[in-house]
Length: 52
Image 1: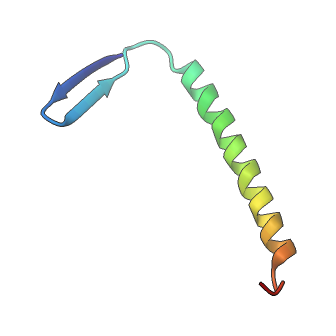
Image 2 (image 1 turned 90 degrees about the vertical axis):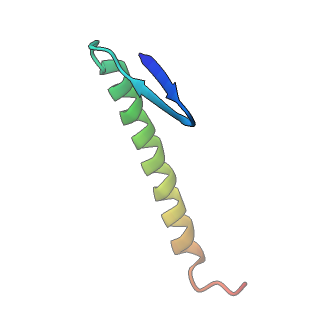
């Protein structure tokens, strides 16, 4: 990876190597986010209509 800073802007570039590790991380992160959103949805459904 290379980075270049011009003023307040930093540009990062990935080299020609494969992005398998990064793609796997993104997939795991997406699964984690989906699980959190599912738990939030379940919580909201359970508490819907409950007086505050």
